[in-house]
Image 1 (cartoon, rainbow, N blue to C red):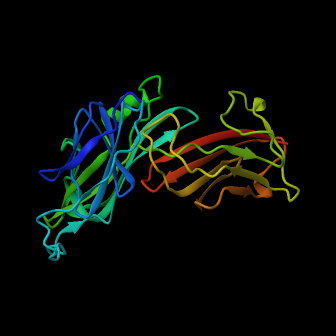
Image 2: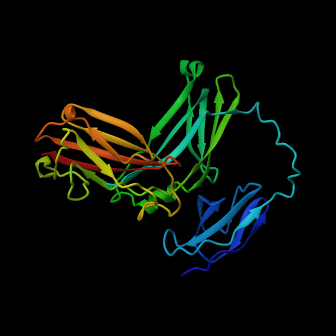
Length: 316
């Protein structure tokens, strides 16, 4: 290995510290990946009664084994109950996550926030920099907003490499801070992870010869897919259990849902499936012999990061 396994994990001023000459590190809390840091041998915040480990690497290459563990117990924690935070307002939902189109090769960042009516909303990254500052004005300031959703632009990898993209949005805790229409503070925080699930490997039709991915410029050149004896068309994919092999950081993933999308000549079908379901039969009435079809399987993990794979075909 190019780097020594990080050693001497400990705590200093409520931050995790360690020794290593490596330029980048993955941080694990209670066995799960939580963040990546670059150019520093410290990470915060850390929490009492939590166990931490570190993996060293070179900006996504040459990973060491995981370090020995360090259990953090705050000396100031005397076992008393936490202060009553019942009067602090929090958003009901606050998510920030990445979406990768594995077929086209592009990345974007998405977010959704929901809660009490607000007139101002700010996003701050792991370094306290303001990423977004939304100010409601005019009559809308009297009405307030409750839900906010955005999708960033998604340039292709030729325009913006994954490494440069992830450098803009480092992993870690992001803060959401707002003001309600009554003038109260409302807030939340979320973990942004750079660990992406692997893309789905898709098979279409009865006795498929191999995986389907991508779409030709001329749909007549797309591979053919045989219908089931029942008349439907079966789409299957291998269970996703690992991180993406090429994009993002390594780490454990837990699939939350698969989202299946089908587009035919006159129909658009989208359905969420649980993590144990890895097939969907497109009803016969949606299928027309000789007609082109397109589908996508989106893998969403517990951090809400999601990776989509597209496939086009001709119905045989």
